Length: 229
Image (spheres, helix red, strand yellow):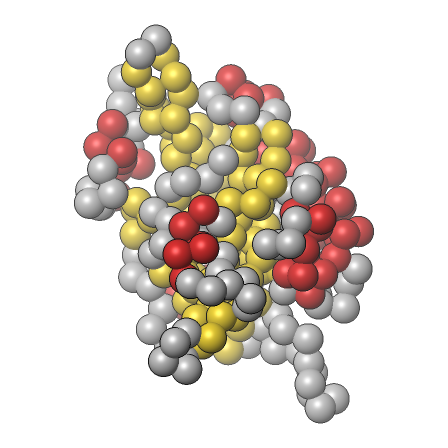
């Protein structure tokens, strides 16, 4: 699963890395301990209108998908992850699979491994920022304002990661990012392709044990991702 992650890379770097055309306002500040329901940066490329070329945007979104038909924002509390294997058939996620796919940039994520009665936190990361396969939705709030929200897809863990937790976030290979964002691509087909590549992408990541402080969402700072014995 993905219940806590790190995104401390500056927005200017994300714009270059993900070839963003436009950056939104009020983007989240750097965080070494992101938890569900907080704002996170996502990359989206909505279907173009009026014959305009598609524009790739970096936006702030609430982590926890709130679909357009939701009665209350609290729906998103239980939708911060979506199982990649079933997302295309679930009412909560299936519309987004078809045309509202996002990249969720991350420096890495935390995963807890059970050891006896305790859980040992690990930090999983690559050499550069990675991108989780995400979905997004717009929800009209009671005051009339629109809320952008997102969820992160997960799949069965493989390789070393399987020894820590049975699930892992789906990391999109750089070569697949354009297809994943393209609203004109058939949703189930591109989802299947991204899931098929997930084990190979995950095999290129590294991990190490970190301090248990990461379990407290109030803890912050680069020291959280430093290895501990």
